[in-house]
Image 1 (cartoon, rainbow, N blue to C red):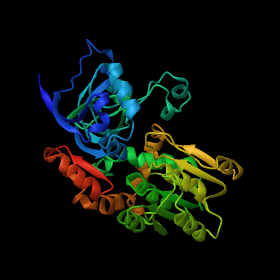
Image 2 (image 1 turned 90 degrees about the vertical axis):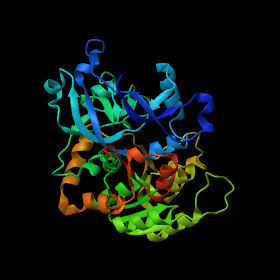
Image 3 (image 1 turned 180 degrees about the horizontal axis):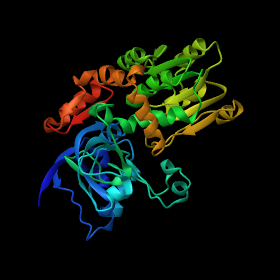
Image 4 (image 1 turned 90 degrees about the horizontal axis):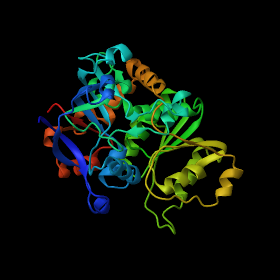
Length: 390
């Protein structure tokens, strides 16, 4: 049997919190076998060129995100190993018999794709709200992902890309960039003051887009000064570094940060807060920093219960909470493509030159993967890519 190299988590539920990291394994080469699996008629084999390392991958590396979903899916499949990863760009090298007829995709096409495999049958899918499909699977979490040299994917999830418009490495980031697009098109940000709590990869993408979509003032907030400095380089008007402070509870707000946000907004608070870090205190910071009648976008996710003190205050302030999952398939992708293809706006160039340092550091050769290298790179850079071709 032909095999490929892939990164996996292979661990029992009882050992989940006693280990960390991914493991490089030889796994069977994915194949199309329509005789035994009718779904293969509408699937493709993709040779992966670049694969993005997402914030959720970091969470799974440290075993503090998607624990329940990960294990329930493995138990359902009677498996103990999962190929991880979900951001990619690659070339179609094999296609089922119905792929071209249904989706216009053919062997040789360069493709990226959405990581959420939706059912197409539930109420949400039928009314065009696939991002909230009640029976969706997520690549690299509830089904096998793309941190491998080859991967089998339903063709309906693919988005044909054009390397003359968007460079391959940036095409591999369509998925997380689409998260930022989805979050920033949920509300109208034209002329607003907006605070982005958490300047990781999607927080940084959100800063780029907030400026592009017309926000009047963008405030970047993070515990990491380097990330805040990068946010300012990307166009944030103001940057705030959260300093360590003694708190009675880990979910308590950072009072100095809130006071600074109020100062920058003339005592009102921001019109929109975006929670992109996933911590309980960050959620409460967002709520506290938002003006009466304002809006809070929740995207960051961590396992466990959250506490919102004085919940009634949020109700009295008339704050609206928006929970963002995935991307709107494929509306978000079309917006992302148009933004990235416009070289005059500088968004694609800033993603590559500033966030990705022109490939110098954040791009890791897949052949050189090790736990030590990954941990070093995750500490240094907010966004990482695997070069699967080397």
